Image 1 (cartoon, rainbow, N blue to C red):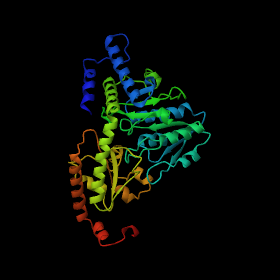
Image 2: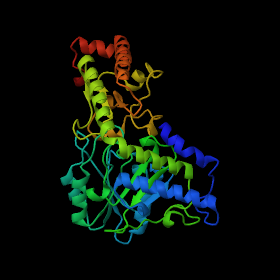
Image 3: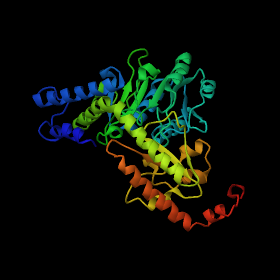
Image 4: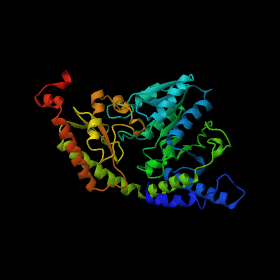
Length: 386
């Protein structure tokens, strides 16, 4: 978390501990003012109307509220939803839940570069399609989907478009209205705010989107999300959004330069390494690289006291299964297992690129020196043919 975010939050843990829903005393008014300011700050980052923002406990809740809430609200129109195989589990799992409730879900394939095939998307839209849900940027590969083109397709067919923009908001410009998106999820901790707080933007004009609440008990947040508001967390989300709005262009350039330097060192100096996903339509801070003839988990264990990275989503990092994102992009199970995701952030320094690369190269060399598979490859054996 950015220290400036923490500084903004601290008063609301003790001195200003009012409930934002309490309208009969000054502590409640102060809390409500803080919430309103945060709503304005996030709205400015997204280019939307503040009253359209619903605060939640994070992107997982936002995605669940959006998908289940729209499914219930529009079930008379249809029970068909389209999403993508590379979505986060916070989207895929609610869709699996809805299938058990009688909804039909189409899971789109992606191209080898991780991008959606727009022609395939349009072909799958039906008269009973009520929602298309496509993430703005992928959490494992950083691949950015062509949201404006997707928005045009959905508009032409009168279908609502939702986007899990958790990875994109605060990293790149995200303007849902301009892109034709009608509902959008994001989280504070992905832009250096606190964990456990997020938001859902729900269009209230052109069109007015209906979302049925999944948590009942008090009618907070315009009836869409009941529960006492997490005022310190919301203040942190607002401050994080404000800082991201101020620093985004310069920070994106700085991060992309560091990422490119790390990739160049890896791809030019370590044999049999391959980047995964589009090399043009991607976030400035994420790189996903396959280390062929290796096990990514074993490689991580060789330097995990120096670096924190993963072979997939943090939400599924305990699983030994290969990344569902990389498998959907056409990678083999072995190549998916051999891939690592590198993420750079606001507090990384250029000199850390050299440190990371040196630990990585040492780990690769040590593991390959003990690997009979690597020895076979170096002896000229065609391992792909075995």
